[in-house]
Amino acid sequence: MTDSAELLATVDDGGIARLTINRPDRMNALSGPVSLAIRAALDEWAQRDDIRVVVITGVGGSFSAGADITDMAAANSGDAGASVDEASAQGIIANGSELARSVRRIPVPVVSAVDGAAVGIGASLALGADLVYATSRAYFLFPFVNIGLMPDGGASMLVAASVGRARANALLLLGEKFRAAAAFDAGLVTEVVADEPALRARVDEVVAKLATKPASALRTTKAASDAITMAAFESALGHELAGQVALLQSPEFQVTLAAFAKHSG
Image 1 (cartoon, rainbow, N blue to C red):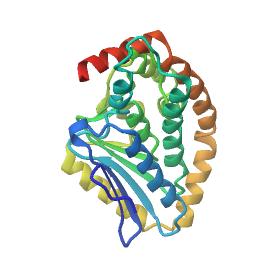
Image 2 (image 1 turned 180 degrees about the vertical axis):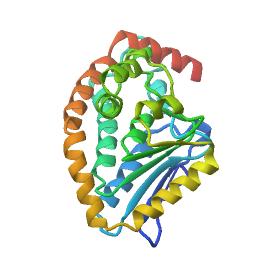
Image 3 (image 1 turned 30 degrees about the vertical axis):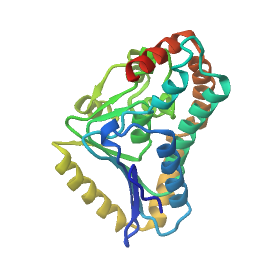
């Protein structure tokens, strides 16, 4: 079982699996190794009959600030005029797509506990859960269009499936924060609670309730719901992969990447 400084993955005797992103100094941004570790843990759990519920959360006042582009910027810092090559772009976006797939392959209920920022692929990770609980200070942000990119990790489908086309377009095209109260009113999250202690208590309560229900009924119900509500998931991932690979190589994104490299250097 994965258990490292940056990602904690545990399963208790009752079959409750918990995945905790532990990079508070980076607002739990997802580096390549952390993303791979998340995928590995989730893929293992998806094959286990003893897992009853999966909980995904972050520490330090953030869920996840999204992809950590520090390594990408560092690789690019020596040549500010060069764009991300196609192979690198394919790898970056494919990793996000596979992360989203790993969440959705879990056959039992997945619960996300969101405190603070859920940004980019971090927001996709949170919203890929079946039940989403958030603190009042939590927010969701898809800032891709602001830096010349497009949403990925299944966001183009996950958001629309929850809030409808008009509100989804506003969230994805404007690239503005969607705070917890508005997200709840729009149907993007399950429930909003006051603060992080209340979030932990509420999620524990929900998890305990789910763990008492017949596992076969939960799995079958989730599969039936996914067959309708997630029918366009793979199509969305395909469109996102093609679009993001092109945009990552664009001059517009290169300007952003060069500026980030200069700032971080």
